[in-house]
Every structure is written in structure tokens, then in C-alpha cells.
Image (cartoon, rainbow, N blue to C red):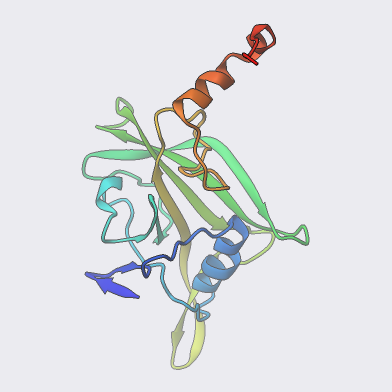
Length: 200
């Protein structure tokens, strides 16, 4: 793996597309518990210092998405704008049905709150569930694991395409395919489809 100025890039041909469960259990939980994570590819980053377009070269990049750990904070202002939390919270469950995390959605605005200008930048903020896994991290002192009061979150940032509907849409579809302009026009016809006759 290539590392430059603290950033980590995957080898050519490799992409990082984990599920929500994998992000929480294999990365965030291990980060908060000081457990080793192999490969250790997601860096620590103060997300609220950097504007979203500055993440390239600093966070783990895979396709058009950026991943990083950050300490949870209520101050989400950056140099040129701020992240506003949306009223969309999704519980994350294991395959066994145990709740292990929460995914929150934030939208980036240019300017000062509350008069900012909405952009297409989306952040998904993953946190551990209080009812499932402990969400506060530890530190090691003299070989002992000691609670340090830091609450870690794992962030995924991407720029939503202007044609996408809803803030909850990922930048890429789950199957890696995208709708063309003609596909979107066709789907928007709704009930008028019954009146269309295709040539033989």
C-alpha cells in the first residue's frame, strides 16, 4: 500500500466497499477498543478542520468516497462552511440481529450557519451503539488498557450526483451500476408508460 503525507491509497485494481456492519465491527469497534486492525488503512483525521473537497490525499480514498476516523464533536464548522446533521438515523445490525451501531447523515453547507448554501457533499457518520458495543475508546498506559473518554466515529464522505434523489443515496449504487439520462427519463414517466407502444 502506498502512503503519502499520511494518506493511504489502495493498490491499483483494489477498491474498498465495506458493508455498514463491516465498518462498525471490523474497523470502528476495533479502533475504540485498541484492538489491532489488519490492514490498518483508515487514518485518523479531524474532519471539521478540512472542507470535504480537501480530503483527497488525507483520507482513505476508494472510488469517489473517502473514509477516516474522527473524534465525535458538536462543532462541525470548517474553514468555508459547516456540516448540518439531517433527521436520518439508521440502526446497524449484525446478521444475527444485534444492534451494534448508528449511521447518521450530514449535509455540507457553504458559508456560516444558519444561512449557508446547500452543496452535494454528504457525510455518513458511524458510531457504536450504547446498547450493543461500548462507544468510548481506551488508551494503554504501562501495558494496561485505561478509559480515555474519547468517542470515535467513522466517517464516509462523498459528493452526491445532482441527479440522485434523496440524501441517503450513496455515490455509487450497490451493484456498481449507474442510471443513464435515458434511464432516468424513462423511469420518470410513471403511469404514462402504459400509453407507450414500442415498435416491432
